Image (cartoon, rainbow, N blue to C red; front, side):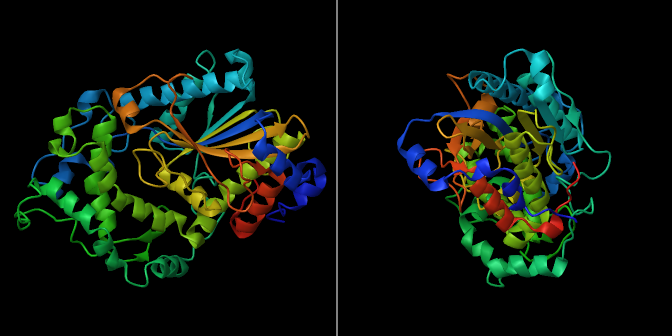
Length: 446
């Protein structure tokens, strides 16, 4: 049987269903009296070099893009920068402080390492990010980073054979969100396109837009279409795909600490970058938060996360869970597409000051805490999004409990209660998961 029904797990663990309504009412009006039992951290990779060769990017702009080779990075596309590694280690160090304060970790790295599970998608950028995080989390004894030699079904379920994508359905689902007229996005995002063109072609907002310079490609005018994609990009969005290559360096220039004159050639600050990146945000939203695509691409990782929480709560080893029942910290490192897809599956939303809605930030993570009420013994799930600000990344700001990253609570539709943390009884979370996960897209292997 490919997928055991998640609701069946409740029968084996009746304590997980303990009086959801009563506990919700009490927790909503009382101080937090829960104890942290496990944390699952699902994060994005750190700052990197651009994904497109820098010399080739020159076709999109009138000025050459600045090089990243002088910042201590390995040459190449999509490789972690030295500052990206530093910031990721700082983030791991913050989690070490927080989880030790919560008494989930003891502060003895050698013993703590045995209860920490780290897994990363098998690309150098993401593995290096996971290693940097682990070195901050447990500096004296970093846990090994687990990878698969081929496509990992957690992060690449289609390539791994755990899920099957219907290309025609993918195109229809995205077109359905756009009224069958994807080119209408050029009107909806006209301000962002205009700003992008001004930056790329280096002219002021107060003058009439000049014609496209000879020999250059105007990425803001390439038609936006929806066509079948592949396992990496499930649909292709025409001009938005090419435009992403052109704007991708701007954020990396900023967070990697380049001189202001090198960030969008001196034309972009953090707010401007955030506005330009709305064009990429909508691309990610369409490709990975669209309901059909989220179910196909994210059901497998969702199932593993839910089963890991249940495994920890019951203390019983469970097929399809990550690590062992004794694992207190589970770290998954992948790309923004993976985090965006999981959020879309559960309809999770967040807003961090300085970023657009639902942005999967560099190094940022969706965090699921398994907590137990000290009054009733009931288990709850508490979701949040934790990230460094763009300026913390740019300045390489060390993180402490007194100077932490940003943390915002995340509401889980269908089970969160009305308290400050939007806590969700574990039994209710399992039932929500059962309703959104596609059992045909789940592989219960570890």
